[in-house]
Image (cartoon, rainbow, N blue to C red; front, side):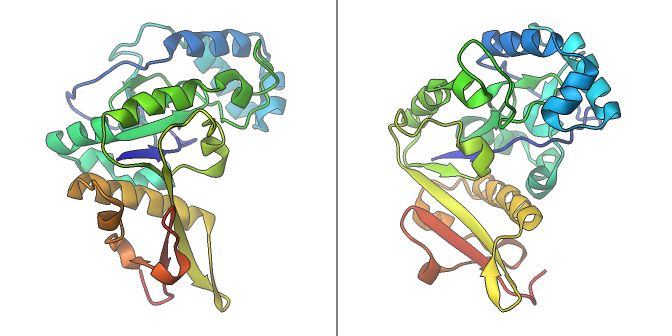
Length: 258
């Protein structure tokens, strides 16, 4: 099985992580092309393009200027430890063992607007470029057109090395970047719902944390089948067979749960 995650807007390049193995991103040439486009924009244009404050726009313009196609410990850190948002708080990668990181490296992918797809231990330089950004490029008007079928082809190759389907724990914004027509393996969607105002519903920040918890569960248990995935029970979630379908697993949590 191959698990997909979204990236996070927040990054952590400050917390010490010790000496860890690393790999290199697979789409550096494409990333360089996007960086070249972003460098042509002023801070004001970046702010407008990405709906950022002036401070954040200036920070990211500086990041684009500093970005280099050569990755090292001085300018990069492993992606799974660089991202720092709700998903990654749930995953808590800094407490994974070396063996668990090794398993994650083989079974986990992170979709990215700038890097396309990242393996957990791929070195990553800091950036901000959400997949839904309407950045005009030689292939079209946005990043979906820029990446085209490339991501699906990459995932086909990765999934071929693993038995079972792709398990999508990424957001809709990011999973839309995967060309389903080019994808040759089945996809199982995981949905996390809370009981609010008399019914079950998806609450964004809770669902994000739950995706990270599910990824952590898969890593710890070395999940290899959809059936075993249904055993997920972290922080009060439980599989809801009555609301699920073979390709859409629903996990629900009651108000009394943590």
